[in-house]
Figure 1: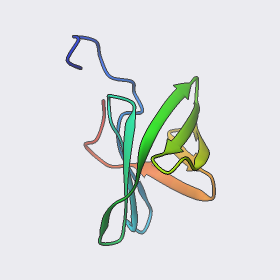
Figure 2: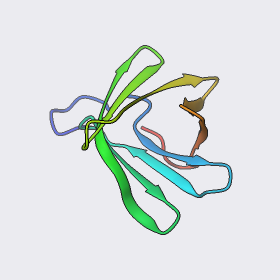
Figure 3: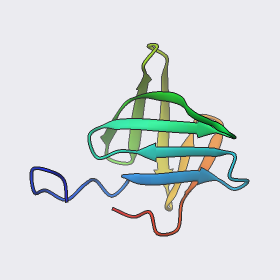
Length: 88
């Protein structure tokens, strides 16, 4: 549950590439934090969800998009899978 008592969006949680190198956490407050290898918080910013589509704006102003299809997050050229145990 979020602070206001509502359930978080189903996409909230950790998404990871198959090799584990990229880890993107979608936070319940509309922020994301992406780690790359040993570099924690390599990219951070805001995201919004409309249906199965995600729009990202990182803290430098760079924009990107993603789509969840069949439980898999396709984020630009990346394919990320829900980390086991990381469900909303």
